[in-house]
Length: 161
Image 1: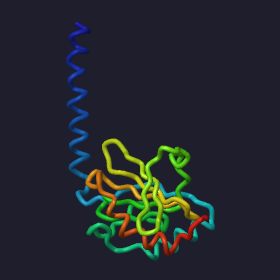
Image 2 (image 1 turned 90 degrees about the vertical axis):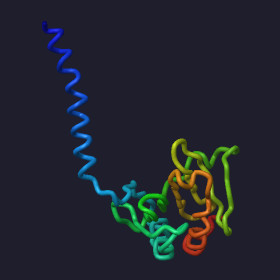
Image 3 (image 1 turned 30 degrees about the vertical axis):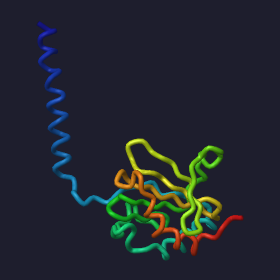
């Protein structure tokens, strides 16, 4: 009988979990702002990132500005998380890979990292601060947002060479 009693309890756990999940989903906002980790660069890089923040456009790839949480001069976003920029990130390990993909857009070099189940991530190369741009799955085969961001990066973050 104990075995039978346990079998009756097991199905209840998924039902309770589903109810909690549905309740939490029902309470969440449909226009939620993305949340991203804020980098913690050295002060000289942080100053460059602050200058970049002032130069960033209000729209990228036709998407309006919607900065991620927590608010910081080191992060920016467009389209409720479709495009997220972080400035002052550490040098990505993939930059040491001779086989890594790269691109140059309007005078700014970018390391290209393809992410499974998401859009690409680009990190500026040969700049005094690393600027990372993550795109969601809508941009899986599209680097065009970099054309809107490159002029600001070029103006605010000088080359390191």
